[in-house]
Image 1 (cartoon, helix red, strand yellow):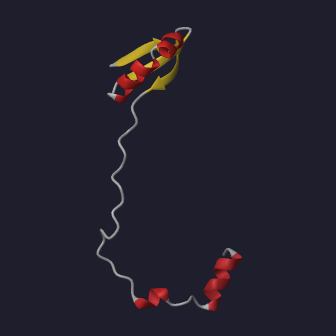
Image 2 (cartoon, helix red, strand yellow; image 1 turned 90 degrees about the vertical axis):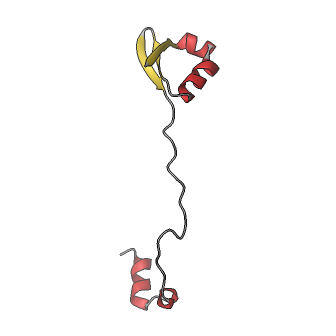
Image 3 (cartoon, one colour; image 1 turned 120 degrees about the vertical axis):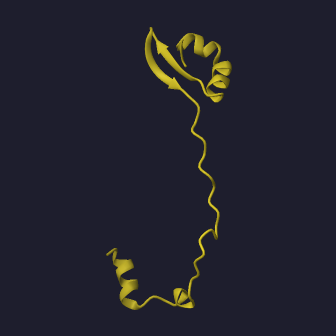
Length: 78
């Protein structure tokens, strides 16, 4: 359910409205009776990355220096 609140009332009761938004309620801030902005909860964060989830290994060749033509391509921006 959406709650519509005048900007003046929102300034007066901002902490309460913030708690309501954090609890999941969507609040429309109105200016002169017209919708002006929306106060709503943030979407939940995605799960954090976990290094090593994939079972892949790098060969020793991965750490070998690049050939000159590849280095030149990186430096030239190609």
